[in-house]
Amino acid sequence: MNAPLLERPVAVRQAGSDDDTAVAAYVEAHADGTPFHLPAWSAAVAEGCGQRSHFLVAERGDGAIAGVLPLTLVRSPLFGAALVSAGFGVGGGVLADDAGAARALAAAAWRFAEAEGVTSLELRGGASPDAAFHTDAVSYLGFVRPLAPDDEAQLAAIPRKQRAEVRRSFANDLTVTTGVTPLDRAAHYRVYAESVHNLGTPVFPRQLFAAVLDAFAGDADILTVRQGGVALASVISLYWRGTVYPYWGGGTAAARGARANDAMYYALMNHARARGCARFDFGRSKVGTGAAAFKRNWGFEGVPLAYHVRTEDGAAPRQVNPLDPRYARKIALWKRLPLPIATFLGPFIARGLG
Image (tube, rainbow, N blue to C red; front, side, top):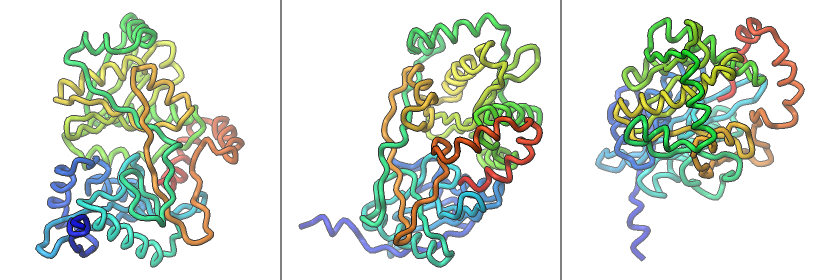
């Protein structure tokens, strides 16, 4: 009898830049908030990829924020158009005080999608706002676990086989640096571009990485592993609410023999602890992939992630999954492209992935 009273009326409006501080404070205080809900993330995506960003805010009659929904309007000649929350993030979705505010935000987002002629609304995470959304809770897994109290305990917490790989890296004369200087950014981009090219996927725009690093300022950095002065592995990480989020990371072909990737993630765990973090969020991976197996090797258990999609009647959701068999031939061709050409062309394609 009392449940409906908990859903107090709200009004939904589009937020402006003068709302950023209040919105960020709401996200920080919400138990389900993520860095991808922050205005800083949406602004960086808009700047780095040239896609339009919008922010919806649900308010009570007294002006108190009751929910937020970051939106990126992604348009791509290859992958179609979609309204995504949060664009280029693995999380996002509706963040609200109650189901009523969540429904209001989702309904406003759908009206906005219709006004823009977009037939798909994608919400990454959170509860499904209403029955109009199809929920996929079987495709992706998230991997999070606590950090150990010190370096030795962190090494001991890694399962035996993976711990042996980390130990082998100690003998390879690897050096680890962290920073956000132009040198750090250039090294990361070279490594990351080669890494994703080897996987057959296009690299994101350099401007996206720069915009995220600048938007998060002291809450983001680059950790790079070198051998003989040559960068072999590198990762951009976010640090937020006591959790480190290694987000864009990879290694060159030479990284495997030097165990540079193993050294990188172990070093990042220790670096994050030194920064005051207590949890390591290894991000999402598709079920049944090598990436998911790699994270399990480190002792992480996969937890299903729920993504919700609403489409116009009869419209199929856009497909940007590289595991889709329809992309197999394109991936094989992309791998054969010379790296400089792939690095030049990649951002024009990747900025439309969302």
